[in-house]
Every structure is written in C-alpha cells, then in structure tokens.
Length: 292
Image 1 (tube, rainbow, N blue to C red):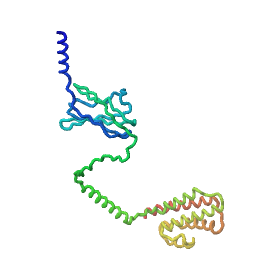
Image 2: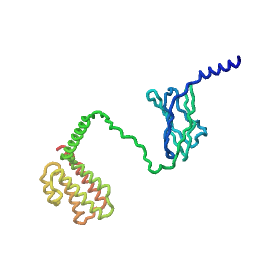
Image 3: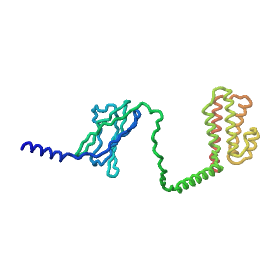
Image 4: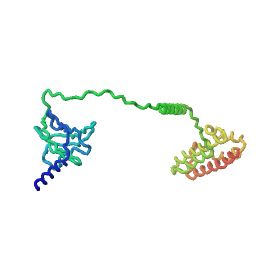
C-alpha cells in the first residue's frame, strides 16, 4: 500500500511538471573573428514571461566570453530572443551558462561551440545585405514669406542707411561773442606773466594783438593790419563806445608800440597794468555790444 502511494505521488509530480519549451537555438556555424560580435538566437513558441538570462557574474563556465544586453522581439506566434556575444580567445570555445527563465519554467540552454580565428581566411567573402529600396520621406512645405520679408526689410534699411550717409550734413558753427574770446585770451596771458624783460616785451605784443582782434570783431574795424595812427584816426570818426574810449585806447596802444618797437622795457608790473587796461576796455565795451 505504501509503495502504491509513492508511485501515485510520482505520477502526479510528472503530470504537474512544467511543459517543455519548444524553441530553436541558432549560433554561427562558420568561424568568427577574434573580438567580433555575433549573436546567439533562441526562436520558438515561447511564452511572453520567458526571458533569456545571462550566466551569473561569478560563473566560470565561459571566462573568455563577453555578453551584451539580451534583446526580445515577437514575430507572429514566435518570439525571438537574442544576445550579442564576443570571444576574446582564439580557438574553439564553448559558450555556456545561458538559460531561459519564466514564471513556471527554467531551462538551461545547451553549450554552443564557436570556432574563433585571429584573422579572416584567404578568399573569405563577407555576406552583404541587399540594398534597400530608396525611401521617400515627405518634407513639410517650407514657409518662404518670412525669409522674403526679412530680405526686403534688410534692403530697405540698407537703402535708408546709404541715402542718409550720402547726404551733406550741415553743421552750424557756433560763434562765440568777441568779448568772451578776448577775455579768455587775456586770462591765459595773465596766468603766465614772465619775469624776463625780453619775454615781457614779447607778451606786450601779444596783449596788443588780442585787443586789436577784439576791436576788429566787435566794431568791424580793420585794426590788425593798421598802424596806431591810422587806427586811431578811423576810431575818432566812429560814434558810440569806440569813440567814447578813444583816449584810453590811444594810451594803451602807444604804450604797446613803445615796448614793441622803441625798446622800452615796461617791466613785469607794466605788463600787468596793460593787461588790466585791456580787460577793462573789453569789459566796458561788451555791455554796449549786448545792448546793440
């Protein structure tokens, strides 16, 4: 009775055993090149939960084999499981340790023998896949009006720039009043009054020139190219500020001529007095200039 019970349990275990996996194992039959990648493929009516597993990291079954990442693809009722493999030792090598594993089944794949060579044999002709037909990729229609608008805008801006660059720009010259020009020139001379007698005589001529240019600009009288006598004779016939200041002007111009042409040394103090007289004349006559 006990023997019958054990036999019955054994039959139940065999009946409950997971179904065998129906697949085809493919690997290269021709020699492969050392370090070249090839694929080991398992194809068949495999359940969706069955995957191709690699050997454990500490397994010593295939120490000269490098495995890539397994891939899975369904072709109709079949599934295709593949893994890239590369061998780093020449000669005949057995790739083992691969297995199929799912929820209800685990099955080790038989070892795969591969012949590995250092180089291709003489006369080897690689298999080249046939050329695929040309693939026409529809391209969206490009919008051309933004580019045309940008080009037209750039041409308009360029034309405006060229037209503006070709115009003659009229710059209005700002003319300073005569009394400001003379005052600035006299202030510059006062700031550098020399000690040397000859330098003092030279500066006297500069002071006289400043005042003559002021009179010429202020009263429209050619004073620079005339002698003192000619200038004073014309000034005597003028009305207004020039005629009213004829006497101090004559004294100033005479002192300048004595220092310039007669060799009289006015000294540093005399130069300062001439500067005072010239500045006083400009200051006095500029009010009448503004009123007129």
